[in-house]
Length: 492
Image (cartoon, rainbow, N blue to C red; front, side, top):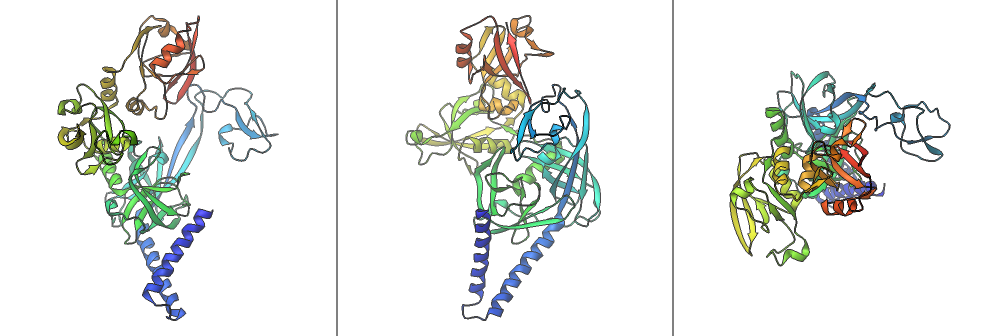
């Protein structure tokens, strides 16, 4: 609450300062009020014009149990004294006073469809064809999407594509009178400039918040999002997908859901790039370099010939990849891609992913205290390309109960959807081996599964796995993850 008050006070002080700049201190109070009113009218006009390109989005999807029902067949904290047959997915998780853990009397019927779930958010009209950019998390796997336009008319929307990597989705409506979309240049966003955050609620009503741009660029990263615009403002009352506009009424970003770290928006340049890919291909085609990298830490900065701990150092160049063909080497420090100065490893992955496959980029590296530029023709990033390249290089342990294992690297984690996890990836299962026979019900170990624990002991790499199985009892208990599922299995 204090931070919200500070934001409001800062904006008020800025407006008061503007009044004093226009009218000296000696100016009559009536003149100052008139100036404030003029400023207020100007913001109202900007909000009114920009709101024409902001729509309300409602997405419906049915709720379905997973094959194991694990999302619901779990103990949940619920109020004491309430019926044991209540639907646990409707139970609020806030306020734990006088609550207890309880299980339902019997597992729900697997595969049962429950009433649909509605999600509400906002979207930005992109062109005169009715394409709308909105939040991927809102759309999900929705089977019914409705859009409320600025003129209060409702239209059914068609899903064009979803890109989970950036959190951007594109939908389309039939629109007779599309308002002119004024797209700004997010590259020219300045720290300290005022911005309006516009969105719509579930009923289609407009929500507006005034804020100050407090940060921008690749150094900002929240969850899956990289290269953001940070807005110092009161919390928005609407969901993700709304428009952030500058004082000229130009759209400079698309809002994402508020986080504990603040209020952020995806730069409009990213939104346009991803939307164009989804409209043309239905998916986003990303560039692929083929290196394993890490951040440059302060201790190695001087030894690498750098002035500051920035860039990304190459730990390994994978065979048969664009990096290998171009001549990049281990221990090269990538400091720039074309005109983009690389700040860290995550920034490098973002820049390469945002580049188009088969495009040529200039990679600037620091090698042996000298700076050189190397042209690289990027490949296309696919899970098969990432996994195949690492599979040829990662050290494996073949033969333990018929499993081929490899350490989960950051790139492999991204390819398989295991971000923020540590473990040992199953690269292969030998037929008719103990590992092939191990099962939990119908679930058997297979390539791509992630082993998290051995006999309740966390394993973060192949060496840790080897140490954990050296005790080799009759049976070994593995905790395994596959996609969103997780279970235990014993290998004899």
